[in-house]
Image (cartoon, rainbow over all chains, first blue to last red; front, side, top):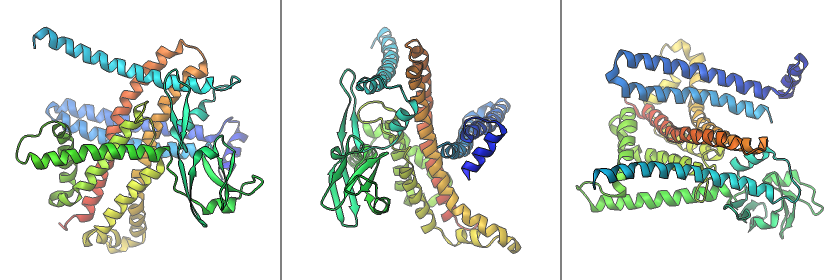
Length: 82
Length: 357
């Protein structure tokens, strides 16, 4: 199955394997997600500076969870490229 | 102390920390160069192989010091075969490909796995699947060292707590107390309510085990440098423990949430989703910890390998600065991953023991 996807993609003209492409897409997802979290957290701090430590804690937790999802994709990409 | 000497101590401490990081970085670089120099012919630097060897497990324990040739201390191999328990030193199996025969089978090491071979050296796949490899490998040794440190620290703290009943904490106890109270007040109580005391030992163990092994994995010399929490078997065991604790402690409300959905006619889709959810939550815990730690190690090793790939010394200042920066991020990740694992475990256990409201 992974070989099929690989040959299909190489027929289109991509060199290398699809694992590298998947890892890049996962990085895009992580970037967008954590960027949104950071942005909203900073806006919330601007609105209410005395809640800064609670907001920071929740931001870090949410960032770690989003990063976890991106890393699932990286693990699958590593599996595909070997 | 006079004002002038306090200021001196502060800058002295900062320079001490910087010197520590730089020297630690120098040790890991010299470990790489020793590997290259021990070949008779100049082998081209294969970054992928070096990185995989550093983050993987192996049957030998590398002993690298600067200016001394790198040695590997062979670790015992313990195999449970169908003909009984076999114990021998892995020194018989190095260099890779040597066949070692015991009274029952012959063994050969291939790609860091032990395979059964017949007399001529051909691999017997059927037989290899039947042996259970219980060897003391590099990761097991690092786990023992981590466990020894944890036991020493926490047994001494608990005896200090008993002796100093009602008095202020002192010494090592006062160092660990903020972390222990942090686990109790910020992780256990908000998520588990008033029944938290039963699960505190589990949460504390998980938190400190993951934290200590993450931190030891970042230290490049002796008691550390082994990628234990990046080994998926270790994180799998931790999440299996959490899985059993959650499901064995689930009360009626918990099982009702899973098997009796709220509008009853949604059961055809909600029950499979919830059942998958029982398994996917611990699997997510496992992969999150494994991937975060392994990705961090691969990143640091790749940045240092950059010097050897580009084969010039002028890359080293850039590379070392990047690596120091990545090490700081990895410190944050080490603590954060321990916190997230413990937090999510507390959340799952809290969901399982929650009263009906």
